[in-house]
Image (cartoon, rainbow, N blue to C red; front, side, top):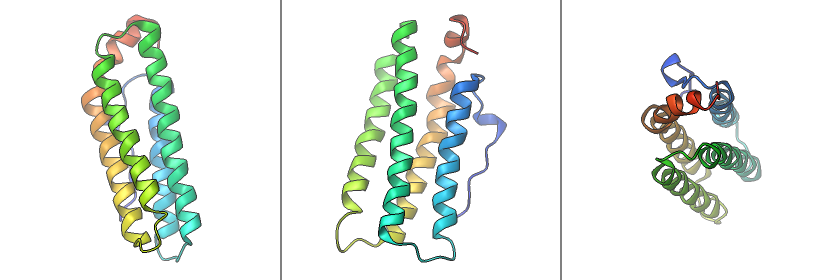
Length: 139
């Protein structure tokens, strides 16, 4: 699995949010680092995946707080996308605890899903609120 490299196309122009997106990818890269050429324990992998999920949930809370604060019209659709991600990650974290799980396969699947989801989400959905947030003083 290749590490993820931040590209300017993923910047939405809001420093706080861009920083959070970058941090999310740093956690994903940390998971990749641990799994490449090593034999991490299931507990190590679970802890890192939990960190990834928890950070995503934290980030969603920040965005959703701004949606409320600024009365963002497209919030319901955006929150629905967040909720779909939340549910998928919860399911992954539940599945990874199972005895017969292939930890390497599951880790690759979760990291791939999470980063693909985030990068598409940034480009398609997050960029929609940039102008609106700027108009409300968030830069």
